[in-house]
Image (cartoon, rainbow, N blue to C red; front, side, top):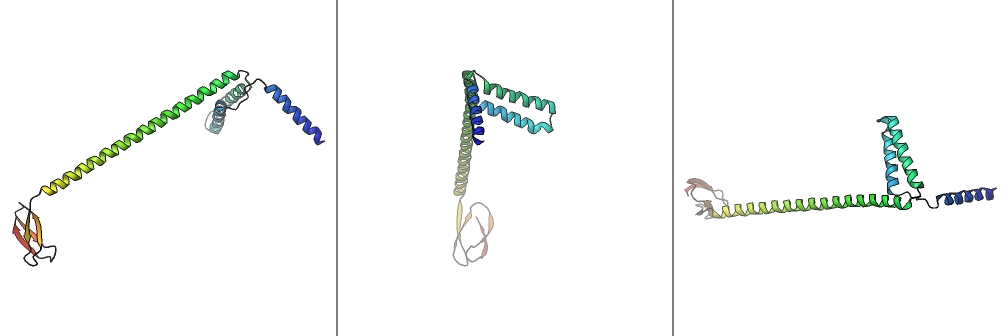
Length: 168
């Protein structure tokens, strides 16, 4: 009995191979994309018009079967290559745009760092340009640096905390 079953399977397989000879018979990128469209349409069937979705699904599955059984192998292969080149070009354009965006961000970051460095340098120069007067603490003799031209100021020694008033 198992022999009979196996011979029927082999016969069916040979008939299928004979039928598919000279046909495209490839589940390529376009066919996969059409199948995804059909499945997505079925997922949204609840929210969309049911007949419209069923028409879209029937159309896409019919197109998949047409492409699969087509005897124009060269034409179907060219269609698939054009779609692949389109997606490869889109991916390359996206990659180039991402690279350009990263370059712009790096440039902006470098410009910001240069501005901050210039600002810090300017602040250091301004601090260095301030004229200072040095007083000695009356209590401990510690040298204290205070800005010049501020008038009478109260000076506190950092060492002994003694305070005194002087004219700068």
